[in-house]
Image (cartoon, rainbow, N blue to C red; front, side, top):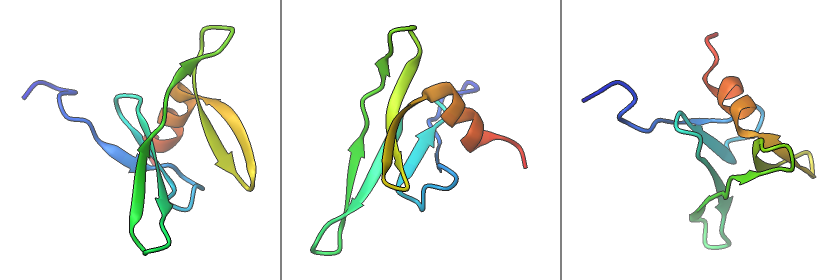
Length: 79
């Protein structure tokens, strides 16, 4: 397969495993249901007024629209 063919999701650092970011710019959120199962939700990426693609991320009870490119860099940076 060509390079970049597969979509790879990794856990967003400092998100306690709630969010995963893909190498193709998609973000999914996991919520634990009362029955113990996890609910997966693919978050909608929107363009802000400056044309930057953002997604709402909640950390420490505060929700902010974060630049998707920053999330990809944070998640896939080399250690």
